[in-house]
Length: 280
Image 1 (cartoon, rainbow, N blue to C red):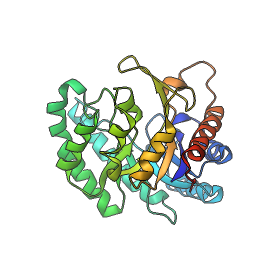
Image 2 (image 1 turned 180 degrees about the vertical axis):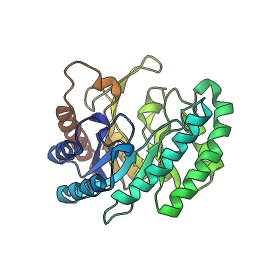
Image 3 (image 1 turned 135 degrees about the vertical axis):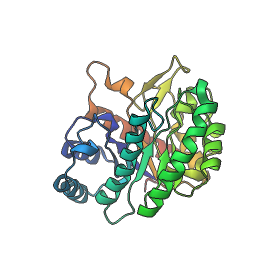
Image 4 (image 1 turned 60 degrees about the vertical axis):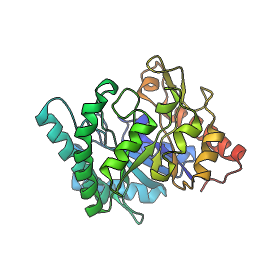
């Protein structure tokens, strides 16, 4: 397994600065984001900027395992929902354009909906992700679905249902167990059912229970990263462990994205050592 970091924690910084911070902190890979509020907004990246980003990645030596592209594919406004699905298809294309010698980055996305409308929302999600997964296959890009607390797909059994119903080898999981943790699931309960489907991960820290929970910078809570890493290793996962900083943290006065990246690397690398695992 390798250590990566998500630009989600510094979305408005120039991509040059994002890459520098992640590299300087010690990480081996970076997850870029292409949502509307980001400096790397999909709609603002012309062909020359896309080529420049690829050169920046090459110069840094950082791998590019994932591209975060979440938009709501089942928005109540049908026109907006259709535009969002098309945006996800264009995000898949962007992953191909930014790919280096490795395979294109996995697309991190969510299904949205609500936990109390799960039965209706899940039926809408299936054909959307079947179509997107098939398009991803045509371009060599895997989808990494992020289940999320408060959304329709918010617990392991619901994620497993969606995987079975979509039934596509390019529809996989971003294993962010923080969302299960704040609902009271243990690490083994979160990892073991889904690790075989994981193509990417997010890790942060957290305290409390949904809906009165709080996300934190790694090390500011008491999440057991050592057990988490051991579970992933036993499950055969070999990809990136990717630090992510929640918007909850970013909104706090004095938030320093560079300090958060350095702290995340220190905490996660120490967890690797305590788990008896090598990074990379």
